[in-house]
Length: 182
Image (cartoon, rainbow, N blue to C red; front, side):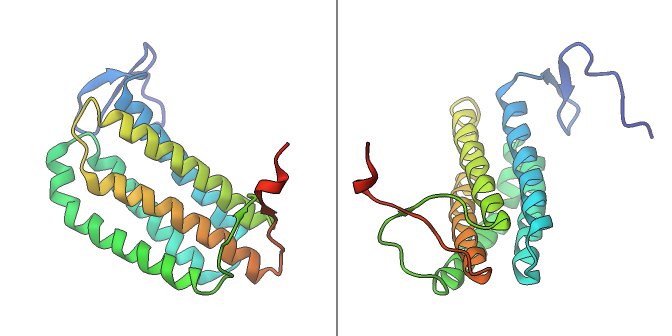
């Protein structure tokens, strides 16, 4: 099978079920954001040398593929909602587990530190954009709340893991405080 089909040469593409839509449709933008988030996760995984973290993030990649598959179909969203809620609970448990392993936050921290941690911070920002994009899409089409909830928790997980990776690599976090204003 060839990778190119030439069917998108005039600005249209097909959804999984065969429906043709413009490449600038909100659903395509949402699917593109999920794809970008998944790719950013792949970059982060390539930098991280902690198998336990990479296993979690690989599971997240699988979740994002599932979300991308079901997003165009409310029927599929409903069918997979309970599984996504279980995955959201898993993400919350991971947040709790790794939050307990880093210092308590009393100030904002600047994104950065080690390369793996910085990559997770960037991936967190991509996740937030993806969440905003899907919320915007949900104003046009019905989107299961479990999808938005999952993405919201995922960005928290990515933040937490960025902090944990910095700790594991003995890399200092830089604090931002109100005193740093102009």
